[in-house]
Image (cartoon, rainbow, N blue to C red; front, side, top):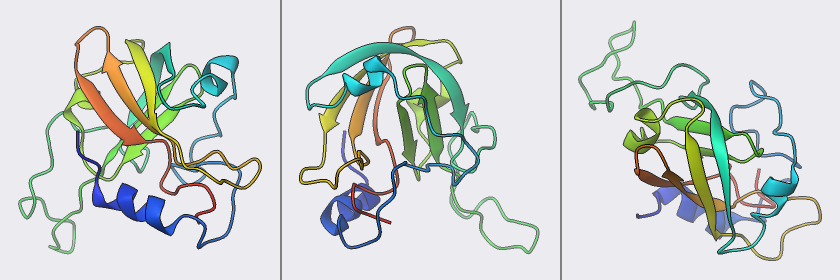
Length: 159
């Protein structure tokens, strides 16, 4: 899987903005995940944990479309092309993933699906208490589809 440009930019620009203790992936519309032992176990690259999906949405907390966004074909009320609403998924162990693009693997998933979540990237030299910026690879154990997304919009030290 390739990293989206915003993930690369977030990693490069980490440390250039103010700190925050939580990855507010849906800007205060979702309560911070409960920090569990299973989530903490994902704190190193290569670590994996089995969990279940507890929420699937677009990045604005609306329902995730079952089909991909078709650029230029969908217009808003003012006749302007609509932006892709992205993808958000939350897990029982407190982990979450978000992306600006629609994700087929998540769209084919259901609440309660078992997932193996593995940490594939973790930023280094983070301020104490700022754990943002992990990138997880998820494998849906029901569908066998995989996806890779960041847990937050910013890496540690970012906005």
